[in-house]
Length: 344
Image 1 (cartoon, rainbow, N blue to C red):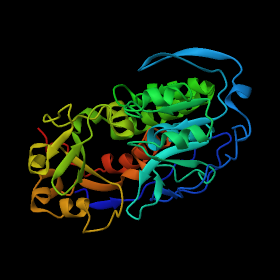
Image 2 (cartoon, rainbow, N blue to C red; image 1 turned 90 degrees about the horizontal axis):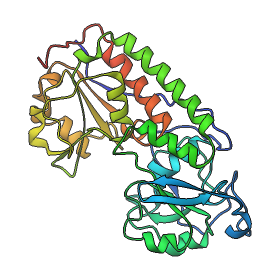
Image 3 (tube, rainbow, N blue to C red; image 1 turned 90 degrees about the vertical axis):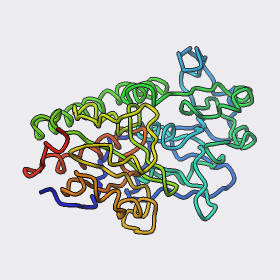
């Protein structure tokens, strides 16, 4: 029988150029809502205007149509942390500023980037509505985000600098990461990351034997009564599940969101619960969920075939998140006692 466990996450180092690694914890990076600062690498000084560093331009296709961008952007502002700043940092490109989220204590937080030095990256507000004035103060020559970034502010943002939004949801994450690399001239580096990821996938598939025999449900609970099921396009999670060839419950739904009462309907051989904080806190939404009779009565859970893992290290738009999730899943799904017949 596969035993119930809380799984530590191995943070996989990446070969990055220019971004300074600072060690990986399981919490997100707090940043002060401070005055704009000068990035440590890759960017121009604040005294340099966008016009002075613009140089050559090129046109790229985006979800918003063709956008003319600097051939070598010098001052990038990110409207999103885990889906825009993270892929840039992995490529060694340090934005001058980024949006994030506001933590419980009111401080700004950059998520999923604990392995990078973000001390020189200015805070421009919450990802739901970045501060336009703070963006403009950074004198960017390029503004970037994900598919949802700045939806109600695009006209204002475009009045400051070209805006490129890259979608990590509606397609394979590896394709989105390749587009980030092309945008900043790091395609060769991304190709190396892709090759390493593909090699690791092949290793894990070989270790599992026949992944298609295993049905896996990847979920997270929040707000006391909602269950999010990690469906197609859910960043690193969906990419890894698909690339390994694992099966999914028949109750899968493109919306991906359910009431927790539907959890027993997600019949699977193995259940992964993603926790984004307080991974052993019984009072959290996740803690209440995994301690509930509803959860404990699931056939895979009753068989001990489930794991609660750190979502801050396994979810997000990054090569490191893909590798981390592979490292977590391999020992769980290669256990000799794993019962692959719970989902017939």
